[in-house]
Length: 120
Image: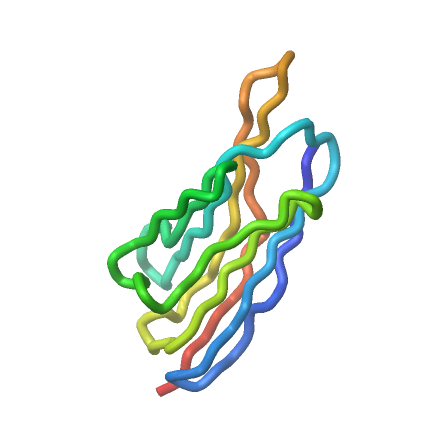
């Protein structure tokens, strides 16, 4: 099994910054793509950013130029640096990753979520 532990959420004023972290542990052979999602109250979970094993990144239009996803493969950790935060960024943020194993199907795991609240 694989466990994901998220940290870094909190309350911040509009224009401020936060850095989310998500550390994976357990039975990990290799991690391919890592993701960050957001889920605002009453809305579906939406993809915010992704980063492949080779470091290619992709962002939702709403966060381009403000958020940066990165990873530390040695630590099995993915980060989300969030700058110029807006009240509409308020949501629970979830990390997710794909664990690859030569003898098992690729599996997706989710973090427990961390609340980000941006006040106006």
